[in-house]
Image (tube, rainbow, N blue to C red; front, side, top):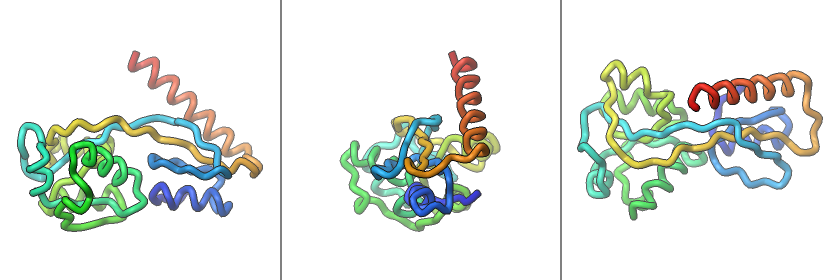
Length: 175
C-alpha cells in the first residue's frame, strides 16, 4: 500500500508498480480504466470559529493551508472557489503540505483554514479542535483505476468485490 495524490496513484498504475489505484481527482488517460467506487464530503475547517457562512471576501483574506498540486482535494477546492470568482492566486497560502493528516494538524495549530475530507476531520470536529465553516461544496467522487491491458490478480478481484459489497451495504443503510 502506498499513499499519494491522484497523479501519483495514476502514475503507479501506469508503470505497473501498482495493480489498482484509488483517486478523487480527474485522471484522463486512455490506458486506464476508471470507475466510481464511492464519494466523500469536503468541508472548510479552521482552528477558530469563523463566519456563519464563508463569503468571497473572507476566503480571500484568510490564511490557507493547502494540499500539494496534483491532489484531488486541492483541485476540488480550487474548482469550488473558482465558482465563487476566487482564483488560486487570490488566496493567501501560508503552507502547502503533502497529506490530509499534515494539513489537518497544521490547521489545528492555527496556521490557517483548509478544505478537507469530512472523514478526515470528523474526530477533530467532535473534539472541538477544528470548527466547520459553511461553504457550499459538492460531494467528490472516488474512482478506482486499473491498467486496461494488464492482468488483474485474484487479490485485486477480491478487494474490488469487497468494495462493491460495502458500497451496496452503505447504499441500503442510507436509503
